[in-house]
Image (cartoon, rainbow, N blue to C red; front, side):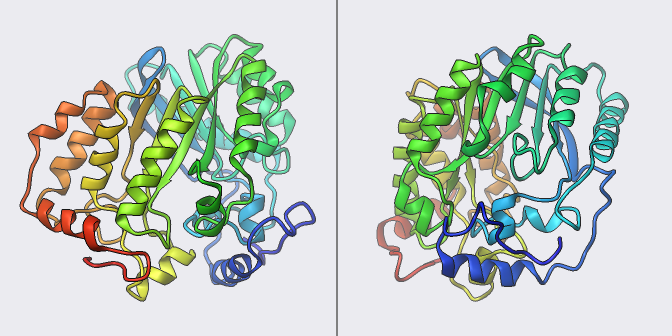
Length: 356
């Protein structure tokens, strides 16, 4: 990534102090990436309104999220994996799609019904992904059942989504809302838009015949464990009014982020997996699919418990994602639940973390 700096579009949108710190941290990145290779690609299973699908997840390597280049979110290090210079050509992005199709052909017995395309920024931002590429992607996957594309609310328009719905694809927009609480989104995550902008994007999607998949962040920096749990419960219930699927992502510690700086100095601990289970159990009654995918579970830099029970709780979470049955958590227990309960009861924002 070239030297981070805010473009005119991003100036004055976030907390200046956060952005200044984040630009300094991101500028330390030295590794460079091939614009013809995707950042990541993998096969999985996903729960959708139409049932469980085999999914092909594609993370395109673009010039990076424009908001992250201005400074950006306190927990997101994905822009550090972006291509130098701020843009990637249509031809290079087409090569990345071909790499992903080859991966699917080599590793799956059948083609995936669900395609998920992320850029760690905004697929619908034409500075990141040209309109030509967007239309080519829609044509390439027109014979699949469903597609998910990632975007900030600003770039969601019915005209862009018509490229996908117009070829018969069930289409969802994945929006990194992070929280339904505007103050937490601005002060803890350093994201510039309000909940009202998310609602407006959902209305644009609905007008295009598309749906919304809301991404939430569990335990951004500066929240205690109990505050994070309460914020997620409120946010899921509020998002369910506008999104058919809510994905709660427990925060993990990524390089070149403010969270990494805090974690290194003992000022941040990722959420407990027990907290994830608590939120999923409490919100199982909402009128939406609620899922979670704890990245890096069981590690010091990812959501974790004591180390002994992490894999069992993670398995229960994945089981819940597919079945939406909170009784799966009745099958797991560990002595560390008592420690977690004490942390939830006693930890405060001004004296955290109480346990590593």
